[in-house]
Length: 264
Image (cartoon, rainbow, N blue to C red):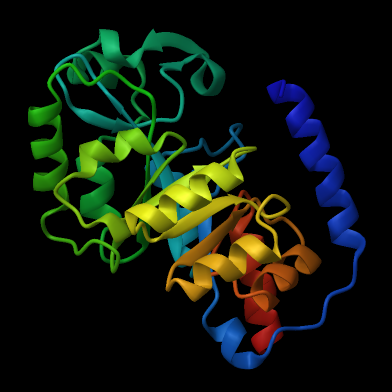
């Protein structure tokens, strides 16, 4: 599906879902809510996505986790940025894979290294680390780098890996399968079957694509479900009431505020 059309359809669905009343979840469910700030708390005008400031804002508001994306510089330093270049977010078309880390730091100073993010937020926020379809010219060395940076943390307890393409989980071969979470788009059935067969930690995707049957299938197998991108109280309550574990949001601070208010 065309990406722009898909975004419009999802936005329309979100508006409808926001209007559908939902019962307030039980206190114990609200207390266990695990909200994940998608690329940190950002507006890409005053605070930019996937930056230390965006993650600080989420952490300071009590948000349980942060999601972010990995790319690699030419000298194989993992950095936290969603796109392969800085044009969309920073207005600079610098291509990450074509620059050494120090050159990237001069061009895009707000792009943190993976090591900086882990050092600052690991153990304080749960880390949802998304592999992008980036260059892996030396996968053995790159995997060793990820392992070294994450060594102070425990997989599943402190972090998970996400990927649209589960083949990318090969780069997390040092961690157990249940630390990996495929991200489904329109291929829910395919990735659901794969997650069950591979013993992954569960499945993630848009909340409207992961229906009751899928949620129940993974729960019965001891796996968890993560859904995004929740942006209203009714959508939040809906997901909590149906047993979703990880709730991804572009407005996680506001969603955390709703949880805190409901807890009184």
